[in-house]
Amino acid sequence: MLEIKNLTKIYDDGTVALKNVSFTVPDGEFLVIIGLSGSGKSTLLRCINRLIEPTEGQVIWNGVDVTPLKGEELRQYRREIGMIFQHFNLVKRSSVLKNVMSGRLGYAKTLPSMIGKFSVEDQQKAKKTIERLNIQDQVNKRADELSGGQQQRVGIARALMQDPKMILADEPVASLDPVLAHSILSNLERLNQEDKITIICSLHYLDLVQRYASRVIGLRLGEIVYEGTKAQIMKLTDEEFKEIYGEEAERIGGNLIGTVKEG
Image (cartoon, rainbow, N blue to C red):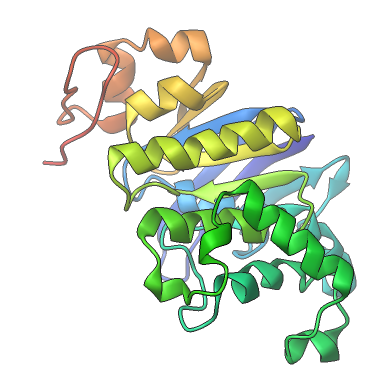
């Protein structure tokens, strides 16, 4: 279980990205974080895996406060937390296989892994993971030869190589068209349901949120302004929508499909 307690992040320029954020994520949940750009979604996810250091507060993972962890203890923690990025964060000139194999760096011996040498077991694991994401026909291609959807599947496969207990997905479909967006989120849903991996995913569009989330948290200006179950987000009122996205926001397509327009 993940517990976020009074988490605050103030950047060096004085920007308050998160302000006293607290919530709990039970094992196996598909939690979606919503809010405008700049609401604190990415900062929150990066504080959870310690890519960004919180200013105050605690990130507690299975009863252990991970905010003070350093060195090998931090490395051990990060093994359990996979990360998927909006812009994929792949090594563009490397093959699909090498990019996926990099997910084992937290487990591999340092020197062999630096020159691309991994165990037979790790190589077999990578091939099975690639097949599971249905990109086996791309295995020897360079990452920059792939479509956006294929690149994000590589990103998911790389995260899976960590044997994660939780995956953090930071706007994983923001650069994809609607069909590919559903494909990527369906893969995350499958991992959530079949492997019981906890998913925390930031998204913009309400139709995707309503389809995939088991619970939703809305951020605005670094504070939680909404919490709801799947049933509640399906019935999101105009007042709740504006509380999350602001008075200038517009709902498009009625009650089920939503987006925002920034003024």
